[in-house]
Image (spheres, rainbow, N blue to C red):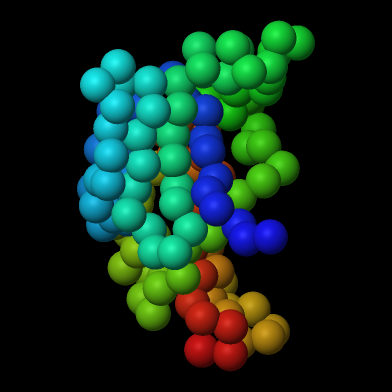
Length: 130
């Protein structure tokens, strides 16, 4: 078994790709011509975005759209960086909402939380022990 990818269902795939490029510095790897699916180059594991309509076709009983939820969903995407404050500031400047500013944790990590315009919850953190 190998962790292959995470797919985040969003209202506008192109907009989410653009936001993640601007806010976090990832490069776009792929955007389907339909605009309903796209991927970022994030390392070994792919971070992908798919349109809510695509989710609707997979889940006939429906799904909870992070973009429609007042509170963040109980799942996050974490990005590791040596400069959490700079990454946090960049995300806010790009349009993310601050949920928690950078805080030094007892185990040595610096951690912050932002919520992206599409509703995605992102943890920005330093390496463990860093």
